[in-house]
Amino acid sequence: MSYVDEVLERVKTKNAAEPEFLQAVEEVLESIRPVVEANEELYRKEAILERITEPDRQFKFRVAWVDDNGQAQVNTGYRVQFNNAIGPYKGGLRLHPSVYLGIIKFLGFEQVFKNSLTGLPIGGGKGGSDFDPKGKSDREVMAFCQSFMTELYKYIGADVDVPAGDIGTGAREIGYLYGQYKRITRLYEGVLTGKGLTYGGSLARTEATGYGLLYMTEELLKSHGQDMAGKTCVVSGAGNVAIYAIQKAHQLGAKCVTCSDSTGWIYDPEGIDVDLLKEVKEVKRARLTEYAAARPSAEYHEGRGVWSVKCDVALPCATQNELLIDDAKALVANGCIAVCEGANMPTTLDATQYLQENGVYFVPGKAANAGGVATSALEMSQNSERLSWTFEEVDAKLKDIMVNIYHNIDDAAKRYGKEGNYVAGANIAGFEKVVDAMLAQGVC
Ligand code: NDP
Ligand code: 2IT
Image 1 (cartoon, rainbow, N blue to C red):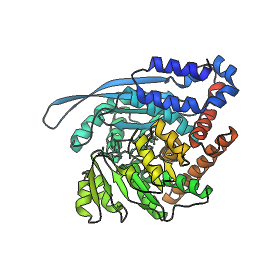
Image 2: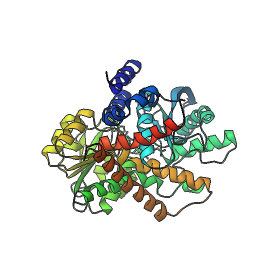
Image 3: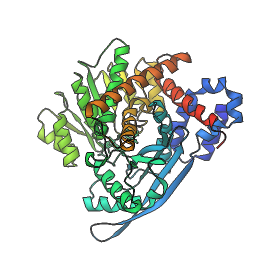
Image 4: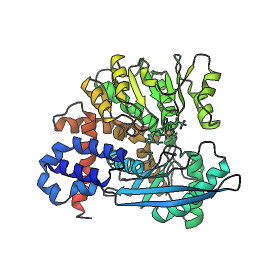
């Protein structure tokens, strides 16, 4: 049996109850096959694949807090420190009822390769909790965050592990978490990113993932003789990534006609009104029905359905496994030319394959959404030098990083005879740097 197959079997046996983690590992190991085959003896001897699929360590802890009725509540907190071969662990905190260890491991594993692709010195980690911030008061969110950090602070630090936002963790949560870290440790350090601008945050971090996604999409189209101007886009999600993806797409002359949340979706043929969407989601924290109520051109539909709308470009920006095989078929039938993932692993393996086989340019999340964590690394740099850069400076660096990632993954795919396969390119390019560092640092 080949080394890749052997390790895939081992990972399946050891993590049988974690389908999302297995999915992420399978995608990566399948696409790095040619690299592994070229170095099989060395990698096997050094147990590279066993080590890269096993987190350095994982923490699981109780988070007890008191709700507004005086009732004690208990959630579970997680932090998985996956791999720090190239820098301190870095990755977000997800607060969503679906969170369990397998979700955090899949996200941490993806983060290792994504962070490598940024070209910046950051390792991979992820954390979170099954706490649901939706419908909670600010005081309840603060109580949860303080309790969560009272455990988490032991494991993190500006040069050790630097968490950030993800689903359910935005500026409000990062603020409460930072306040508690500072209070316990007495350290005023860049231990979290996505901080507010008055206490060490970076300009353009809020926009970075969505903007970066569009810089990547634009570069992809440009290198295939097209551009974003005049394109119709369908977007899923209505959170941080989706909002700023839509904003940048509109700045580039495209029109985004959909967005969605966990209960329904909007079709707005006039183009999504970003200011209204921000008001509904960032200020009121309300449902998309409020968007439809305030916007005559918009239709609201219950359930899921954005991928059935005719488009040139599809940008999944909500969550994992939200673009399924039938959605891929609908996109192809409707003439979609590119799918770039703003979310982490939103497209299932069979849907990805279908899109690629039908000539759709497909850029996976670990490359296309890397602008968020890259800008987090820029926030860390600014914190270290105790300076802050202008919006234009950070935005220009972000754009450079995304353009570089595109060319690196394109080149890596070509080097292994897989031209145009950006999944293979991203996994290979991300893997090469991490493995090089692991080999240099010995067995650990
Ligand atoms: P937010 O919490 O700001 O927004 C998430 C959006 O997706 C919301 O509209 C939410 O709807 C929807 N959503 C979440 N879970 C589900 C679900 N199970 N089914 C349907 N819809 C769902 O998160 P972000 O925008 O920050 O994150 C979106 C994706 O992007 C995630 O995959 C995240 O890992 C990834 N990402 C985020 C980065 C960042 O910097 N924030 C960086 C790189 C990737 P509702 O409000 O109804 O729950
Ligand atoms: O998935 C991701 O890359 C993020 N949620 C951002 C992580 C970060 O450290 O900014």
